[in-house]
Image 1 (cartoon, rainbow, N blue to C red):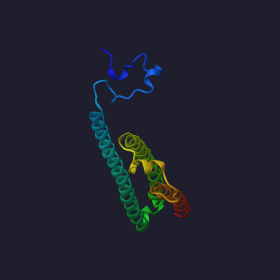
Image 2: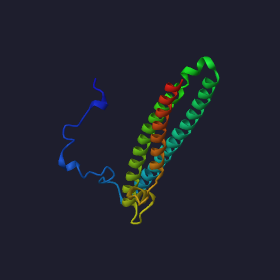
Image 3: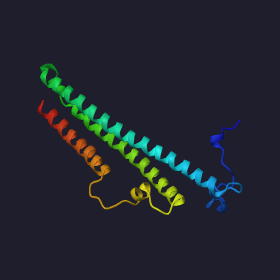
Image 4: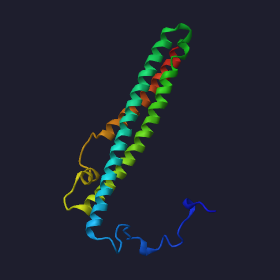
Length: 171
């Protein structure tokens, strides 16, 4: 028995399928089509909220991780027998900062994908540009939320790397 996920239609790359709209069927009237688009738009909005929540959770976990590593550094520094290992929390913070940067980059890509889908649905639902269309088009801004987080994670990665090396050399 074959796995349905492995199944590919032999003519799936046929040019007639390029402009195929799955909602445009012969028995679907324009009112039902508009209702389907509204449902898709609402679902896309839900996905945006979920990915924004993921981004918030990544930032929260980053803050908690750094706080715990600062406390560990303090404890290692105050214990004379553990002082040679005082560089370890800074090294861990360097790695963690880089991992959180990667996680935020994934969330940003998912959000961008949701915004572009939302913009496309807004174009089909209305002549007026909505939130997703405006965000998807972008606007001149030197410091966006994404840029600030990227500087935070990259700056922290470099800072903790330098700190870990310095602490290793000192102790």
